[in-house]
Length: 252
View 1 (cartoon, rainbow, N blue to C red):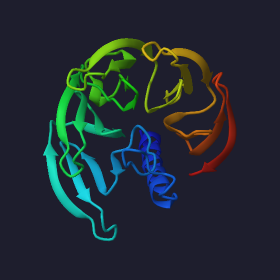
View 2 (view 1 turned 30 degrees about the vertical axis):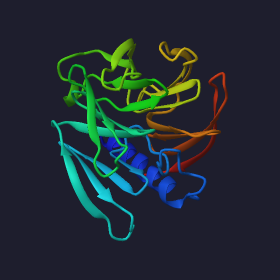
View 3 (view 1 turned 120 degrees about the horizontal axis):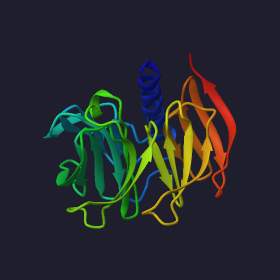
């Protein structure tokens, strides 16, 4: 558990570094998202809004003046909120009881569109195109009532009516990341798995990196940032899914 908490902290720290140190003219997405965070991040910056995921609410801050953040209204939700992933004009919140989808066209007042429910579970989420990818991990407090871990694919073409289209059994899934035709899934002590998603509804396993304990991942255009046991690792990756270690920042 100590390693997981450490890795989550590194993931959050790295997303802040990317957000705060980048050339903003080059690192702001079309929807205003600044920087790139991991799938297990509990906060996100979109334009002048900072979103913080608390156990039972989504708290919004106005950071128009970075040295003086102003607390805005909070959106009250059920207990068990865990992660946040901004995509286009929406926010995707991973929680114990499912995935919440918010309309974010008014950044200071995100509006709940829908919730995709599943059995109680820990579930980071990432999104690309019309599909969301969610990992559900068993054997922990937030998934006490089942022994099965899985990778789920959810059709979100209709944001008000998300539908499960595919599920695949996993070992110990944690964070995940998606870019173009590749999906990366961290499996803790069981390594890092690379899936082909040319068919986005049916991820196909292409490669497993078994010599790393991975907890979260941030795919960039040419490199892959992985938070693992003992440090932050940087890999180059190719279309066939092979990973090559470039560097490692070791942390005791």
